[in-house]
Image (cartoon, rainbow, N blue to C red; front, side, top):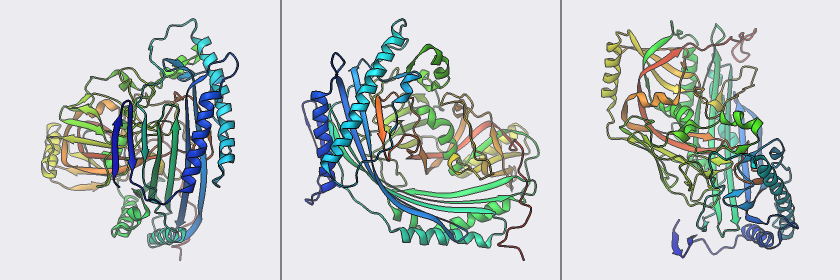
Length: 589
């Protein structure tokens, strides 16, 4: 798609060269939002109360298709469409407004269960926006009063503005609707799930395919606006077995793309699913780790990318801690990201660099976009240079040391796009293995550990108890890392022995500073991330399809194999469930 970019004083404008075909729904939605925005800017003020200095509207028009199957049997599948409205109102001024504050009374400003009409009825859409704006404005006034009252006898330690400045920006991309039929998706999931009917060790399996086509419409009172396409497609195949001692063993194959053909047209997909099922089956009779292991660990391929995603990526998000009433201050401080205090400090080896680049496309990168959810144009951000932390990913909500947005607001907070780790000291595979064995020899160790696959929090096995509680936030010193799905004992003579499963102990972000060596060829891997926000975004009324809790965004990472001099590995802790009393009905005589 071609774009024209030009600049006028204080304004950057990007226009896509679109077909001349009129898009009635887009005209109706933008017309309704602009009309109500003008009314809100001119008329929205209660007597003797603050007038809004910033108003923003977002409408998401989302079509979703989901198909799933298990052991060749089709499970509930559906197609849906919904429109959701988000209203952001700020009162006060950019230096001090109703945002970045939390109290018991200030938690009440999020809610609503009404979707916008799917018909392009401008009058009805305007009515819904009018009501949501009125609610958001009144809530904003209350929050500002609460914030002023709470801080009147206190001095703010971090005297930051509440909204970073941003030049107006306009962006429109091409609709490019490419959605499969639900029947095509059903056929594929039924076929792939049927492959496990030939694997007696597999007790449970599930194949889920999803396609989302979303158009997002945005306007704000500063003059920014955009219409953005957010397509996504995914296919996940999961398999689960159980060892004699009760250990649950699982693995998954997942592919992510922008359109259905990206995830369904792979010639190797069936072979990959079969190989995954056979690997899970082999682990049923594989040995356990004899004792706790401490020594060199090599993470290859997917395992290196997942380790980076689970431990290091959450530290890259510049989420500001809100002001609070005194009784909440200690609770909030526990969730502070420690990297906010490490700008300028070393967080990786000096031979590694890291950047976030939403402008990348192709070659496995699917996390890109043209403009973020606040109308900030996409651009690359250098995060780590020669091991030194230079920046974090932020929104227009300023944090200490980073007062301008990096253009990474997606949903309720900052989210990475495409993270690329680079080095000028990458090793060929043979060299990396040689370095690994040298570390083993230094310790006079009989073997070392190589991890080739790690679990993912979204694809945990079913144990009959799906309750997961996490009392910490991004500031937890010890990260929760999923158990290894494919781990091996590797001996000095090159022999490899598959282990049933192991888990990493006491992993913190500081371990990444101790990386000894990396490969010269990276793995590009995509996972989904849900932004964690403490609500520093103003009074936002989320109505309909686009809620904070269910907002998942694709993030692609490009990470080389990672060799650590010392990590602790152990057998999984906790009690084990009993095996089923009767045998698998598919394979009983």
